[in-house]
Amino acid sequence: DAGVTQSPTHLIKTRGQQVTLRCSPKSGHDTVSWYQQALGQGPQFIFQYYEEEERQRGNFPDRFSGHQFPNYSSELNVNALLLGDSALYLCASREVRDNEQYFGPGTRLTVT
Amino acid sequence: AQSVTQLGSHVSVSEGALVLLRCNYSSSVPPYLFWYVQYPNQGLQLLLKYTSAATLVKGINGFEAEFKKSETSFHLTKPSAHMSDAAEYFCAVSDGPMDSSYKLIFGSGTRLLVRP
Image (cartoon, rainbow over all chains, first blue to last red; front, side):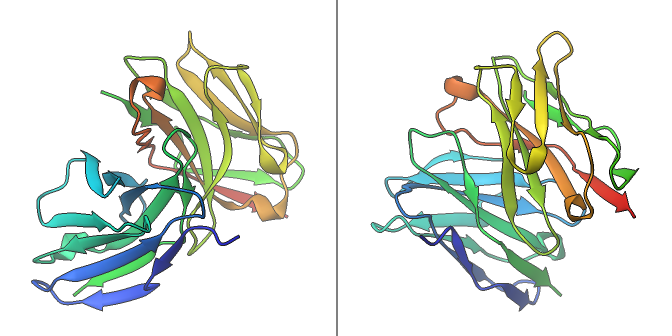
């Protein structure tokens, strides 16, 4: 049983560009959350998707957007990249009634 | 608003010694509390969680934590450190059943170093 998978593993982008990160949840999970982990810090909640809708959002600008597909997989899009967007982006999935989240290995985004 | 404070960004212990990683939380509602471990270049792995059942929680790899409401603490302990325990540890809080999103608020982490 595959756990949470994310792609790509690493990504290098230039300021002002746009990026899309992908996440496939653990089998049986229908809820996906995204977190940003800057170097040396704890992860910060970006938003959560359930039933293809954004259910809750953290304190992130509108440049950060997402999508959830019918198969529960999810994408995180970031527009107009800034140097400060460089971070490890973590995807977490759970079954909607369960409080336990499973994290993927993350995508390391570097903005130059 | 919820918050988590992890005292000590780095903790160093000798192999075989007691591990104690400190976590204090702030929450206006009964919280759910979690400890995660992160190895280099990897995601987060759940060590243990408190969800209003027993206040002493046992997790994987010999770790345990005790929920103390009066002290708003959820410290992580392990009786005997192993070299493989060297990693970054994160304490996290969620609003429990009051928030169906179960979004996590993380502390800034504690890096555990284990000396041979």
